[in-house]
Length: 202
Image 1 (tube, rainbow, N blue to C red):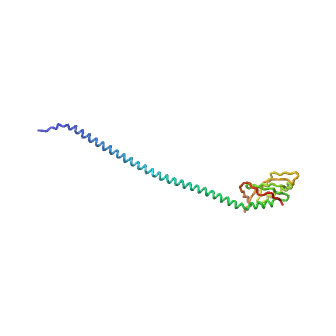
Image 2 (spheres, rainbow, N blue to C red):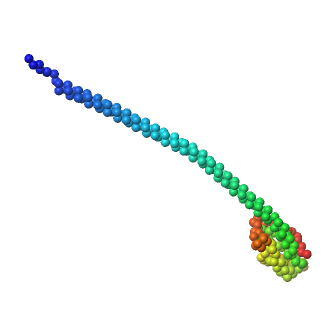
Image 3 (cartoon, rainbow, N blue to C red):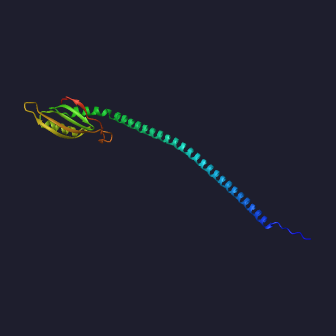
């Protein structure tokens, strides 16, 4: 006699399929979380590595900045040292010039001219004095113009003094240096100074 299965096999089959689907869905969710976690960890590792590289570069940049500051400081010190050396060399070269200027002043002052003062500002000389006549002043200017250490005389003031000896005068000249080439290259920059006082002619 045939046996008839009266169990709801179709309902049981649907339940089995549903359970299998849920299991597959759970496995997929777990796999997705695992993948997401792995990707998150990978990105975090990459970010950490980049931050370490950035810190490394920043530290080296700071070291280079300090080295650049030291180099700039050394360059500044070097420029100051070179400037001082140039000033010293310039002073050493110009030391004999004042002697020549004194010598030329003595040689260019004619008889009848008495200097009361000579001041220097840079390479400009200013003579003040007393002359017996304007002719003596003209001779003094000609002597200056023919000198190797003074050029371009320019008369500023000449004034006769009543009851006094001769006329007072003030004239300017330019100090030059008679170098080997015969040029005028003795421009010394510096504050004004009084280099002669109460000098008289011969």
